[in-house]
Every structure is written in C-alpha cells, then in structure tokens.
Image (cartoon, rainbow, N blue to C red):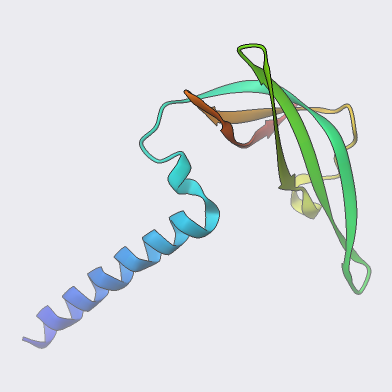
Length: 107
C-alpha cells in the first residue's frame, strides 16, 4: 500500500512539474507542432545591470516568413555571448503561426 501511494504521488509530482515547465518556458507553443527554421537578424539590444558587475542582454530580432515581418526577443546573457545589431541568428518558428518563434542557434 505504501509503495503504491509513493508511486502515485511521484507520478502526480512529475506531471505537475512537466506542466509547469511547459507553461513557464512557453514550450507548449512548440509541443507536437510542425516547426521550421530561418535566418533572423538582430535589430536592437539592451544591456541591463544585474548587480555586482553582472549584466544581461535583451536582444530583439526580426525575420520574414511569406513576405511578412515578425519580431521577438531573447535574453543573451554570458552563456550565449554578446550579440550586436546586424548579427544573424537562426530561429525556429511554428509553421502556420510564425509569431511564435524562439532562438535556435548562432552563425
């Protein structure tokens, strides 16, 4: 009986953890949907002071799909390196819903 309760409790915690992750990271937009990749270019960047000499960078990018322009942002931080206006990046977007996009990689 106790093992069964622990197993069920564990499964419930994993389920809620997964749902929380999908909602907080907006991964739900990409789950089980067809995606495509394209080149994007950085159009704006801002550095924000985060304390004790640390800064993070908020980067805005644009890309075109079917002759329509889309915009989105991401946080660069130290792990992703400093980005500059005019740099190109690779983005992934949901086919049929290109306003849902995310950073895929760097060139």
